[in-house]
Length: 339
Image (cartoon, rainbow, N blue to C red; front, side, top):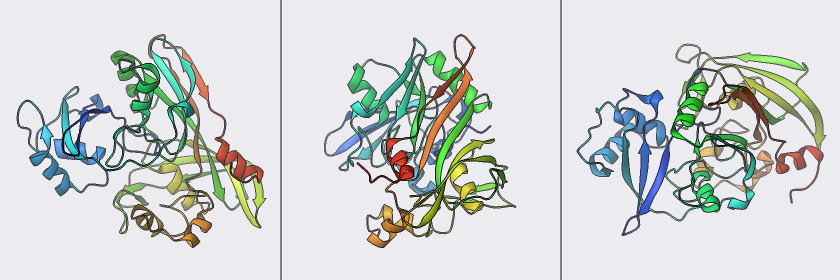
């Protein structure tokens, strides 16, 4: 299985350093074992997915802070830690630290039920309002809990963190080696006739409209397979919907979302793979029209990471964690108005 969680690009160890002067923040990157030998510019393209390779090379040339000069072609190694100067923008509002639900903790592992709307690591728009930083606000600056995988900002549900370097490395290796069983719940448009079905369709990165999106491509795509099971069929406001339990058999970026669309059942609220391929571009520019929001039905994609089962990084015993469907999605399914 690839080193991706379903909804974002790779398991990272990106942490913000102290803010600099003049509206600049230093964002720290630490290279994970699964990126050993990658070119530096390729590695940063994985971490800053909205930036083109040319733009990333400009970052390396002008904004990279390290004890010696690194080039775009430099081969990175596990543990390499450097910083990028990034311009500080007003950060969007995110759920408060109190919204984090701690499901399990021991000396090696922390399992969190992440609310929708909270990014895990820093991005171009988020420096301090992240899961990693909120954990430090809750438990103190020395508290260590490094996410071993990623969920997209809009996706709610389970995130597992390593509380020691060894635990985090073992967790990341478990994801990389396909030792982690994952189940998601998705609320989709339409109602499948079959109770169980599978989509086997190769996925390639990039579309004509959105560089960070993916597409089904029989020639250039990488193998990807998802099994779907209907949990519930329901109707709301004169339209038909279903709750699907999703079992990704591979770990491609946006796999569940693009495979659900392929099957004819796009996720409710999905601005990238939903009613109109232009929605995401207009949303990113903050000019998505009211009519589009009405078609989306929800302000976020209706995807929830519900189950993780994997070997414990220390005891090696099989452990299983579950997170109930997020309240906003549960309200939608039940026909209630959002709180």
